[in-house]
Length: 156
Image (cartoon, rainbow, N blue to C red; front, side):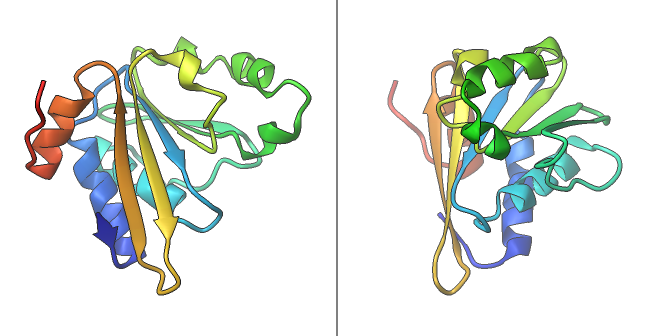
């Protein structure tokens, strides 16, 4: 799907939040400036979290309290370490995973082990700043939930 503006990206995040529940893992992938943090801002708004959501690049992870808590992590700086998976383990993201929605930017290849079932959101930005979003379900009932979001029914 195409999202013409950053505000559209936030609004889609808000809509995505309507199908999220505690225990969910959402993995955001895409280049710098694609709109990953804007997507998380929308998800946070949809989950009813309090306060602003900014990129956690330098603190690595933040917990936002709200109707449904949001754990927002950014693994961007972890990719340069000798053992980035050990650093992910050190963050102890799974400690609050059952009670919160966990969204990880730049976590491909690093955080999938946190949950057998997760949603990958691939975001790319075109030259005209339009975002192209692809939702890739991994296990569980993600395909069913995504059909509620997109209005498309999937077989199986």
